[in-house]
Image (cartoon, rainbow, N blue to C red; front, top):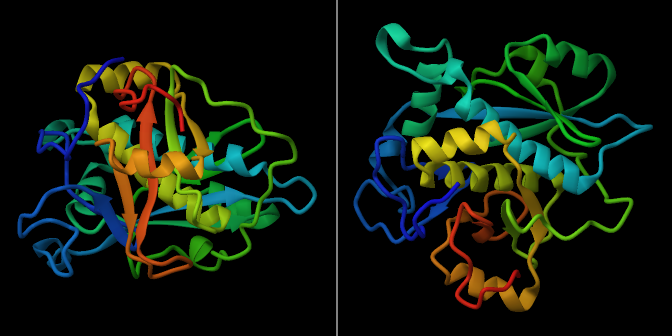
Length: 272
């Protein structure tokens, strides 16, 4: 899989500008429709949210890094699912909702469930993506005030997770979603942010590269960047996620998407 070095987000047929959860993806765009201004025509569109539910059982919670990577893959899985694609006679059952969601401020909300709550959530229309220890179910976008009761009652808080062992170095051939080392975010907040970064990576690719990534099972890693390398990442022209700071953190950059053969390496050629 190869793609040209990303700079600003391209206005290709597969790309749609979008804000992210409480903020926006970073770009150099200065048009009036940019999602990075205080107001945008996108704000006038009906607003949707992409729900994700992570399974957190008391006795066996997932490892934090695995949960983050599984959430990022879940976003890619629903973006590429045949039910999310097509128009007209070839339109999938989720395609209109996916377009409406991406035409407005793109939001993702992560909630947690266990036991009977998880079983009820799993019965709703969606896709469950499994990692080494994590399970994340992603659902087609819903209106901000249109949460199904099975999801509405699930908690957003309480997604504190740990890595029980030292996390290995990322795969040098697969994309890496680098988290800002200066931030203290819950696992749920971070899951939403890396989901945003994965979607940015998806938008940067050609149809052929997307299909190749999908066929490979969407390999990727999520790691926290070294403090000394974070600034270089933010200046490298890589896709960046910017949060507006409505929850947990102050406004600013949260995740940079870099990856093996998908994106060009940093100018220095080293990993953060």
